[in-house]
Length: 483
Ligand SMILES: Cc1cc2nc3c(=O)[nH]c(=O)nc-3n(C[C@H](O)[C@H](O)[C@H](O)COP(=O)(O)OP(=O)(O)OC[C@H]3O[C@@H](n4cnc5c(N)ncnc54)[C@H](O)[C@@H]3O)c2cc1C
Image 1 (cartoon, rainbow, N blue to C red):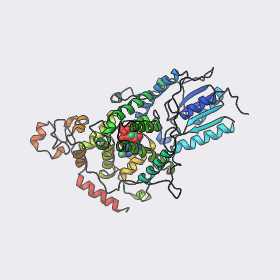
Image 2: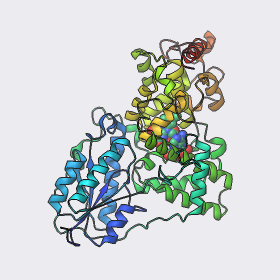
Image 3: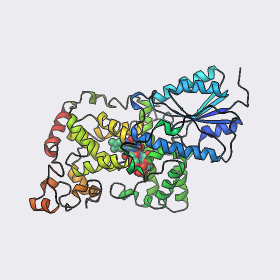
Image 4: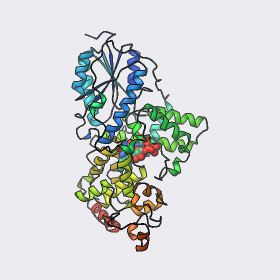
C-alpha cells in the first residue's frame, strides 16, 4: 500500500550539508509532504574508511551550521548514530515516512549501501529517490568514443566541459520556508557524539576555518574577488594564500560545484576575471571530477594500484621512518613544514602534498597506502576519491600518473617554491633564523652559520633521515624490478 501523501518525507543529509542547490531537499519540498531532515553518523558501513579525527571536527561544526540554517526555515535536524540501513529502517517506521530523498555519494561502500536501502524502501512502497548534488558530471556521463571511461585527465575534462557547455546548468534556489511533521522522532545530542577533541585539544590551530554553508560561500567570494587573478602563477607557492581553500567545504557538500561553476562564469561575463584564470581554476575542480570518475570505475582505487604492474613494487616497511615523516621530523625542511602544516591546520598546500607524498613513496620507499591513511585521519578535506587518486598519481601507480622516475628533489623544490623560506619558517620555527641560502638544506650550512642561527643539527633539528642521492638511486633501482 502506498503511504499517504501527507506522510513525511525524510531528507537524508550526507555529503551535502547545505540548503542551496540541494536537489534532495528540493524534491522533498516539491512533494508537499512535511519534511524530516536527518543526519546519520555511520562509522560502521565505511569500514576502514570511516571518518578520520580531523573530519570529525569539521563535521561537528558543519552539522551545527546546518541545524541553524534548517531551523531558520522551520525544520529540525534529527541526528542518529549507527549502521545507516537499520537506522533508516527504524526512522521510517517511527516517523511513518512516505518518502526518502538523498543526494548520491560515490564511495564504493556508499553505492552498495544506498542501492540496498533504496531497494528495501521501494519494496515497502516508500518512495526513494537519489540525486546528483556534488559533481558537475556524474562518473557514468563522460565517455570516450568507444563508450569507456577516460583514464587520462585532459580528454576527460575536455569532453566534460563540452557537455557542460551544451546543457543548461540547473541549480535549485535556497528554500525560504518548509513544514516539519507534527511529531518528531527523538534526536541524539550533537555534543554527546564527542566529535571534538578535548584532552589534548589538538584542533586549536583549526580555528581560522568556518565550516558550514556560509563559510563556503565566503571562501568562494573571497577567492574570486582577488586570488583567482593570480592563481595560475601563484598557486604553487605555499607561503601565499593563493588557492581557494574550498576543499573541505566541497568534501562536505557545503557548496555545490554547479554554483561554483556558475559564479565563475558570472564573473567572467562581467569581465571581472580573465578566461585563462577561470579555466585554470575550473580545471582543478575538474581534477576532483576525474578522481570521482576513477573511484567509481575502479572501486579498489583506495587499496590497489590502478596500474597492475605496481602490485609487484618492492615497498619497504620502516615504522621509524614513517613516524618521522608523520611528525615532520625527516630533516628535509620543506617536507617537515608540510607535515606540520597538516597537523596544525588540518590542511596542506597542494604543491607540498606532492612533495611529501613523493618523499614518502620514493625517498623512503614506503607504500602510498600508508601516506593516504595518515592524510585520511589528519586532513579536514579527507576525501576518498581525491586522496586515493592523488596518492596514486604521485606514487606513479595511478591513472594519468606522474611517471615513477620523476623523483622530486626536496631541496630544489623548496628553493623553487619557497625561495625565501617563509613557509618553512612558519611551520618549522627552529629554523627561523637560518639564512635563505641554507634553509632548504641546513645540514650543509657552515658551523658559524648554524651557530648564528642557534641550530645544532641532530639536536634542535634532525639530520636528514635519508641521503637524497642514495634514495633517488635506490628508488630507480626498485622501479626497474617492475618495468
Ligand atoms: C597526496 C595528495 C593527497 C590529496 N588528498 C586530497 C584529499 O583527501 N581531499 C581533497 O579534496 N584533495 C586532495 N588532494 C588534492 C589537492 O591537494 C587539494 O584538493 C587542494 O590542495 C585543496 O586546496 P584548495 O581548495 O585551496 O584548492 P584549489 O587549488 O583552490 O582548487 C579548487 C578545488 O579543486 C579541487 N582540486 C584541486 N586540486 C585537485 C587535485 N589535484 N585533485 C583533486 N581535486 C583537486 C579541490 O576540490 C579544491 O578544493 C590531494 C593531493 C595530493 C598530492
